[in-house]
Length: 145
Image (cartoon, rainbow, N blue to C red; front, side, top):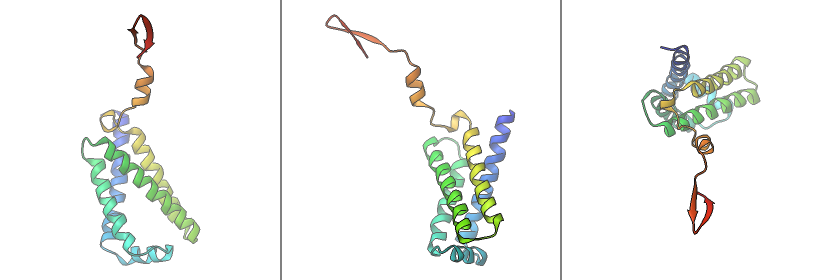
């Protein structure tokens, strides 16, 4: 296993563990989670929505293929964690809440950046820009294809 592959799986495992266990706590409506949501001013039903999305996103990051779905999962996790960091900051929560959720957002970005090519959509715009322009003859004139 290459160092890059190791770093990818380490960061992805960390993200999946945190998201999945957080999702289970939200879906189970554990008292500390309920109290935290109330302190932030969010309705309790958001725990079901966020918990469900976190479970699905965690599974998506682990299964092979489905690169577009993985992009959505990474985006959702990043938005969730940055939103949580801002919510904790605005609510005046303890600094560790802000630090941890912001740090998790960064680890999500690192996992996304390290993912192997088989788990990406590719770069269609870059590949299109690198292709040579073909010229075809149309009624005796050269026209770019």
